[in-house]
Length: 537
Ligand SMILES: *Cc1c(COP(=O)(O)O)cnc(C)c1O
Image (cartoon, rainbow, N blue to C red; front, side, top):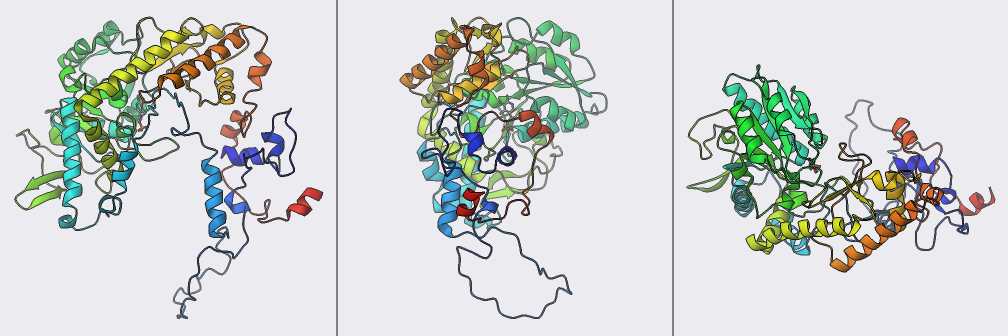
């Protein structure tokens, strides 16, 4: 979208791409940074990379509905397709390229052993509709992963099918709604409490299920204000949705008291487990009084994500919620492993209950399951514990080495991410956005900006456990130099002009949001123009 918007501002793109002091080039390319047209602007009509035999003549049975016009697909040879997508891939910053400090997203290294295992033909080539007798190993794999998840979280059951964190939230909150329904309290309990710092998906999930969301303020230590929470609890409250460690990168030190207060009020405790990577192997959420929690396999257990890539959000459930878990369940009986898609659950609880149905056509994200289990088994229990310890150590190292030039949002040590506010930029004319854009020129993907909302001009840095110390040191040095330049008070213009060296400069984000160019139209951009003629124009 943004790409096409940008293109409409300059035909070759070169005028937009090159910094003002860089020489214009004939091609618009800048050394080995190649300008890339949309695939629809490339190739020639009728060209193709495959050679199919002529279809046999058959009688037209479409009653005049047969397409006569061109199908409108771009005509490219195989090398053109390969080059196009390779060039596109090089425009994307990636975990495999360097520090990717995007707070809350846990952009950590994806070990290659995960990929090797996920690509084994017996796993990579599975089809969800294969006869169950031919997928016994895959079902056992899902069950083993479920076992690890229940063990690591200390919970009774796990629903494996949700496709991402937000989908897991939906699953968990639907289980809570089903449990309230079974108790005859669904109509009365209409409120879901969420801290002001909550990830946007939390209130969105609650609202999508018809609950009213009530925000709970944070105290000056960046934690949930227990008094405000207790005051908000009542017979109308269905649940609290709480992240721990929270989105300020802080452990909710009163979590036991929070759980007790919530339960005493007859409500459920939904924990957003997206930050589980900070405590995995150290704390079992089940011991803290959590009723259900989604786990972002693609964050804590490393599988690649970002750019809309696949995720997986299994939801662990307490005894009270287990019977409402959605289908399917992987079960083992006399004839081996099977996929249970109907009937009521016992899942460790004797109470028969009505599961909430299906959330997904098939059984979950097999590739993600495989990567997560490979990650767990290759690290082992001790290794997973060290993952959490190193993630927390890295974040505290970054915080400690930046706190004299930037302004930490809260005092004291943090968990897996370091949160700064824009206090250090006060009166410099440089905003959080300008600072982040300047990081791009230094070769870094910016940190998360302006989230969480409880902090002014937030900069949220999650270094993860997978960066070497010397790489973190260079990152820290680069940020220190930017902070000092900003504070010199003379460089606001330079910051406003950043990024100067990226393939695209600063985009008009308002225009992109208000008037997105979502559709490519062939009339304005005929494919395969003659570059000699275009140069003459
Ligand atoms: C990432 C994240 C989510 C949403 O997870 P998705 O897999 O992106 O849907 C929810 N809450 C928090 C705190 C997160 O960091």
